[in-house]
Image (spheres, one colour):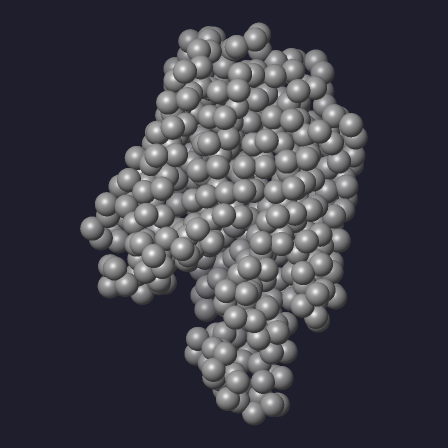
Length: 490
């Protein structure tokens, strides 16, 4: 792989990762700019998740069919265009529409980057390239919150989007300097019915996961919650029936039952749940249990991110020395250990820091090997689809982790509200209202709300345990049918 190609892949992945985390500090500023509540701004984040889930399998397949370099360049350009549209947004509706464009572009960044590595490098060289890509992914997540806070404080929220435009332009320019042959695929009609059913199925599933937070008010079997899961199930059945008859399906559903891929995809779901279910309310817990400031509690995640970045960057060399499957097992064990410490030994700030550090180190060791094993389990013509499925399952697990953790904290907040605790209406009391409360009330608030966060961590620990148990079921790299393309083909 040429250095220019690897750099362009790293730039695209870095841009997508940075966008994942840089926006959080800007939510309040965006709401103020459009005279809407921060809760309304969350719509721009929710819609992004929906369209990202739809775009990942579709762009993965299009990359397999029309060429990996072409689709990757298209994805970077589309993401930059959506970023510019977001920065220029005169209203929240415009911002939501621009975020849809961004999400579609993001759907082709990480999965197609992995696929390009799979088709251009032999197995023994893939680990280092995957390590480099995962390293910049972690770096983007580390820099995002702090950079976003600085931008909002000293410039304006528009620049959290504008920053993607020059990054994307450089990435597309570098990719244009690399001459790669396009993958030959037999001519076949584009599977539009399959694409529509993919959109219906995964959009309904993501929306259903996101609305689980309202299950206490509406009940699971209401249309608001259960109806979306029912629609997703019906869409999946229709998708399977349609795709089994297609000569060139947009999503080859046979991959889902492949003995090489099925356990790997399940592990990916549980690792995604463990990651976001474990970290989403970690700063909240530090504020409640230890009285940490918002800045200090947010900085706690830097310990996780540094460990994640370090082991992600090292995972490529470690795959060559240890092997992908043993390394994935070590990473899954580290992930479970970190969440175990957070769940049962985080009564002190030191315990929480230890848990977050172990979690980051473990996640960095498991994600690279999973990508490596996925590339080895796929034929050359299906690298984009398989990489997309791994990314999609991890995202779905992460969405479930965030939502269910929010449900548990919401239940704790409702219990506190029924007792009339300080700040009950807002769910999590402010430091001022809690400090002014009597000692027994403070103990009640801390115990109740921190218990809600701990319940979420227990579930994340359970998910990590399932990942650890399933990892040995993943077959080793399959040699036959998984050889890379001829040099330069992508």
